[in-house]
Length: 388
View (cartoon, helix red, strand yellow):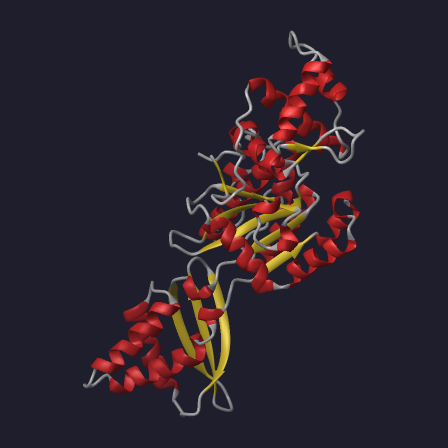
């Protein structure tokens, strides 16, 4: 099911079925045209319903306006949905959505499912995914990779280089390798480095970088025997190779920011500048995405934050659609997101974000390309908007 922000704007009035139908008709027409929707347009959509005159529909539209679900830009105009209206729509009226064959084919092509490519690097995969989300939604696609500080270390190696430099090779689950070159003041032989690596791999494999560092420091306070020298070497090398990782957020991949330039929803230049500043500030953007996911921590759900539900002013005219993805079987997660105006294609975008996230998980877990079972030809099994 879809999980939306727990802190979202509350709707104090619950529309009856007739009002829900009118609200749904207004939103769908506004999503299609971008224009205020009048009672005549709604009457045409609801022409088959007995007793629904234009006067009745106008009365219902007035009730929706009083409840804050729609608003009238000016006196002679029709109505447009508010963020509260979109929230009710997402929570109660969107329903399930299936990806079209065209969307499935586009995803397969973008991620290499139909071209036989394999062993794509995680970084390259994230670039492709952010571009894919942007292209399919015609908005901004954002991918945040998990922080390596929280990921579980499978293997570590040290290699002595010239000028007191050491190459550190960190292998994380699943199939993520990071190389770092560090310098240390104390001269260590290659044998010292190999002994330290064997010790770290034997004692700490499967633990996060943060756990490794804290456990080594605790052991140094307690150990007084033969392993003092080994622990000192391990602590020194960890300090150089792991320091800083704990404060590092995951890499952020943003694609398609230019898509919003042509949208009438962002005609206000100052508002647009503020939004672009948010996209450029990595730490700020990660904080916004983490808050979106943290509001409702159930894993595997699609999270939707709309308009004034955002605590960041520059995002209060936007919709953020996100879902977490998990690396391997651990607790390390990243996020896949689409940012656009509140007038966004909710059902399809939620379906795309969810489906792509599940494919990314599979690809990272297997260290290979999209498996055939997720390729084309099985559209009927592609559930998107409300993952079970």
